[in-house]
Length: 191
Image (cartoon, rainbow, N blue to C red; front, side):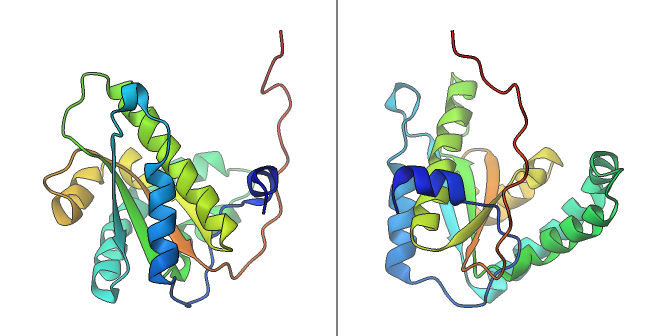
């Protein structure tokens, strides 16, 4: 798969097959994340790859609180498509059956350039999504846990000596083929 094909065909997957991801593929996906550009080359990211059934259940337990707190946001966002609220909540509760969940953190608890650090971790996450897709592995980048204030719960359980929780990424072989949502006009300017 070439770069443009990966960029244009990758979709957020919310339903996965139960097949495990081979360890070598997971290592290569994480290595791709670690190859991302970063502000002043600080390489601000730290990933925890969760795949044991017990740890995945702990994530789902925390996500139950996220679902409850995120519901009003979804109801407002999908006021014209209320069925999306239930679909999204089911995905967040079950992680779509993903066999792996990556948790992304800032490596250190405090960076002088927090914005640069967050952008660096975001670049690493995008590398992970594209590297996974290149291997036929689907993903979904989830910001709701951090947005709803559950970052400290993930940090305390999975990376207590690392910095702030940033996001969660589900990984697995897709059990769906979502279409590209319509692209909105007016999102760039060439001068």
